[in-house]
Length: 395
Image (cartoon, rainbow, N blue to C red; front, top):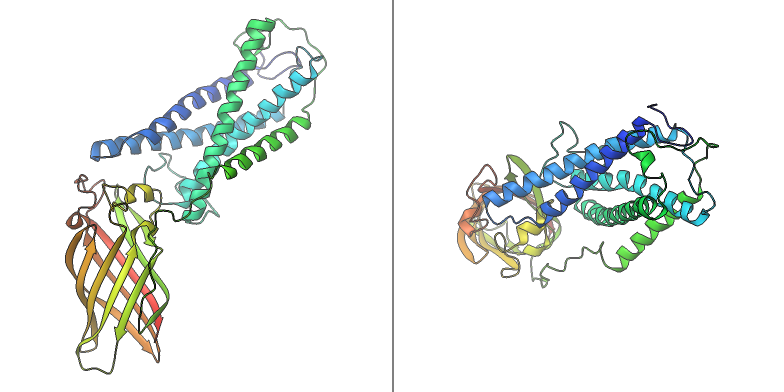
């Protein structure tokens, strides 16, 4: 059998690429569905869920590479002529579905890969490279957008695959022709005809189908990622108004750092640098727990086993500001997830007239607040959570 296509049949390389791709798809899609639905309530379940997602992502990249090779080979080959050229509408539909399949085999893995690269944590790709991508920033917003695109494109892939299989079965059992046979091993008994060209209209129709799919997805709210879970905080009376600030956290998941931040929080600050050493001010910080963004584990972090945002939508830190020989310390109480525990940490403070810059770093033990209490294996999720605070405020 020839490696190359002819006007009547596909060559052995085209057949090999076709069936390897089909095998990858029929493994990858169920694997992704299983991983997405797998529970993660304890260490064993989470470890299994991570393995499933890692396998899904790794296989997805393998299918992407195979699809690129397959399309490159296809573009160099003659296109076997349709067995029923008089059925123009049917031929057009078949070619459009083929384009949707080829495009989806590229777009579905790429969208998932960009989502993976734009966020941190949870289920690494098992290839030596690929955890990050050039020109793809660490961006929760980008990751959420690509997650939505991945869902839409995966649906297009599934529908196209269904139509492709239905067409093949129609040719085999209704038309009883050799359309399916010429993609099977062996030589289909089909006479050579004039070579056909790759048409442009199916490409246009496929583009229209993708645009329509995204239009439907937008109307259904697939790309809506508003702060629906985030508690709204009231404005506070404060002597010092925070102008810019960051309340970040870093956890260690499966031995790798995962960084995040709380987007919504308020700070009521009193501070008088003219007072003698001792208590020279107070601070009360209120944090909207639902505003946390921590890579691909954000939804998990907000669940009942962790922050339990539904029951405990805010956290508060109330403290005295102490100064001893020029060194500053916040000494107070952190109320988080229903637990109130003392918290004291030093911080750096720089004053420039009526402007102040403050930075601090400290560590918390998540187990002290019942966060992830069923996750005892620190190899999976470390107990220590590093917190970083930076803000500028004006008097």
